[in-house]
Length: 32
Image (tube, rainbow, N blue to C red; front, side, top):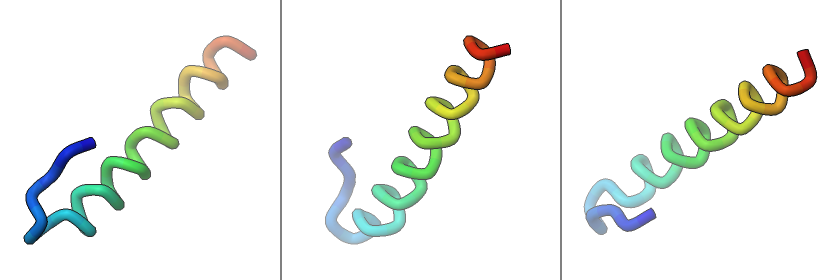
């Protein structure tokens, strides 16, 4: 993930959260 240095911390944080949530949803759907 490449983001601007100014908002790098916030963007990387939300990107990591979105990635974790999406991966969790995919795993949950495969389990169900």
